[in-house]
Image 1 (cartoon, one colour):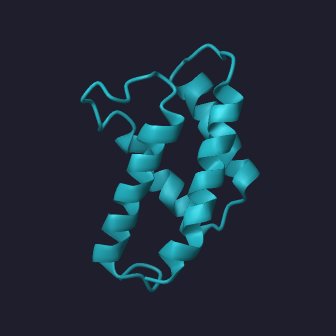
Image 2: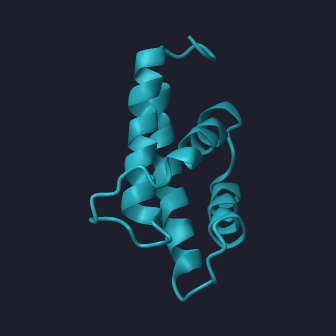
Length: 101
């Protein structure tokens, strides 16, 4: 167990984070193309921010935006900030469900 969490439940929760990043964030627009592992390298960081660090919604939004614009090199576009904010809100909304496992 890591931080008191069941490792199997942690894997399931990380899969939910992966789903959210693909469905809500998707800054390069690959959702629905059959590519579902594009953002896997960010799942662990987001999950750690969410559960271990108890990072705020705004800080998660900022991380997603920086990741898209700096790490991925995406030119900011209309709606990117909103997409990052929406994704962060959905992720933080999952925290209580994750904590019950």
